[in-house]
Length: 392
Image (cartoon, rainbow, N blue to C red; front, side):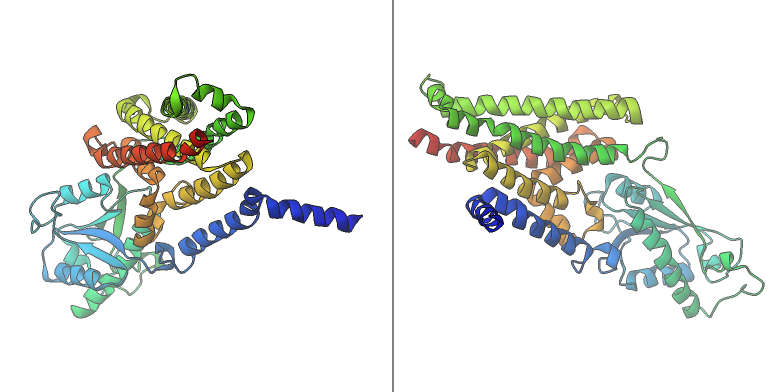
């Protein structure tokens, strides 16, 4: 009898593709994604991805130039000393102000400023003297630490090239640094909970994708109950039906995101009211894409079980790559580019621009354009897949 129960259970599993996906495909997909991120995929944490840093040499002495050269030669850093075309002429030397703007805008995770007197302080191992300044984005805590550590290595090389080091006798271990430095956060320094917006955006985007996929399954239930056939003969048509479902799912997603951010404002002091225009733009666009995505999953699936398995696989995988589960800035450059295949990565970037970087509405153009493009493609694909119900 026990053998019969086991055989029947395996037979049911063999016939249920959704259950097979949940049992075998989803774990493999997740394992593969996180193995690439944390394993040999070139992420920053295993030291195989270079940290981009802007370097501003205000000292302009022979020793400071030697330090910059040592930083440029370090395999762990990608050093920028001139302004990018977005900021002005390509050959314009970076200033403290332009480097800080790059960090605030998210172009770079950190900037290093060598103030006047830095050259004299290199290799002195003294307790006084000028300190270098690292301007950092606290949403990427790894970059600032790496820049600080690699700065010491470069300072040792610059000091050795300049004739050795001095001032080591009688110093404590805490003072034994070839070049002292201080860090200053250029974002979130006046906020009580600076990372709340960062987390709220990731969680909100992930769960509206789940919600839209689940609610879109009403199409499957209406097909099984015969309601869909009666609706199609009423003159509304499949296009009108899909648009109605899309508007409903979009308003549902907007309500979910709004409630989450209002809760964040009331409980965790999220500055929602100060960024209301940007929040509205990103929420409407993201909700539109998530609703269209849910329709694609619903029209692609033939049963609720298939929809559940497909939604779990795609939503979890896209959000693992898109930054909702693991920060994208810790991924390799290749993975960061790959993550842009999902609209959720663009949405998360947009929310971060609004709440973390406090960017103007015009700066959201790339994210809004990409998300709306995904929305159009999803709607067209859902309409195409829905033809099978009209043919039936």
